Length: 266
Image (tube, rainbow, N blue to C red; front, side, top):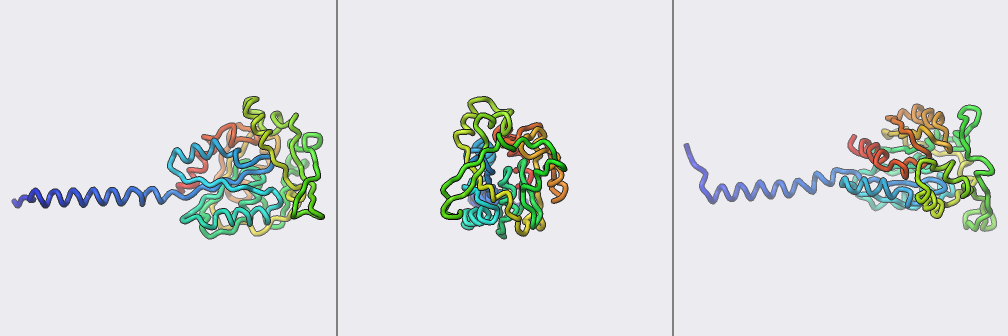
């Protein structure tokens, strides 16, 4: 039986080590980039806990600003934000952010994840999905919902009518399952949304050609759970549910991250 010379064995070992070192980055690169789109009455910080959990598991995470002006305008803003990302993308939307990701058209997006989010069909305004006859239970009504005139270059005469959640009701209605300090931080970061955004007709739906996941918030006081289940079933999403407020991404970031990772690994 022939023996491997010491010099040959060293060369083989070096070659194997090189293969392992080369393969490791390649395997890491297989993870898609996760893009997190916030909803109304929030900003990018609402995703902080989820983003931290995903990054700890090796995912690259991008959290673009959502202008909250209307699905077409805001989807275009997200498209610009993700245009330079190489490789596959998992697009995640919370609340109104779901209407935005539905309208995003980018060939690198491989999956959609809806977190207590609107998932409209083409030609449907999100306001229709808060229909109190079909889906009773939303408390996003005056006086909880307040209106204000804001400066907006896209509005008529540089103005627009925006809606926001009354700070006195925010904790109870929007995020009843977070502590007082967290609710106060969320209120400090609240951003208003153009009233017209919820009345704008949705465009072609990305979920019609992409696999989708939906995480229902079973104790939601903004988008009724019945509406969420209806939307999830209508788009054929892989659906799960947790006992959470509308702000599930803040209250239960690990549970939200796990759903996103399931979509990313599919």
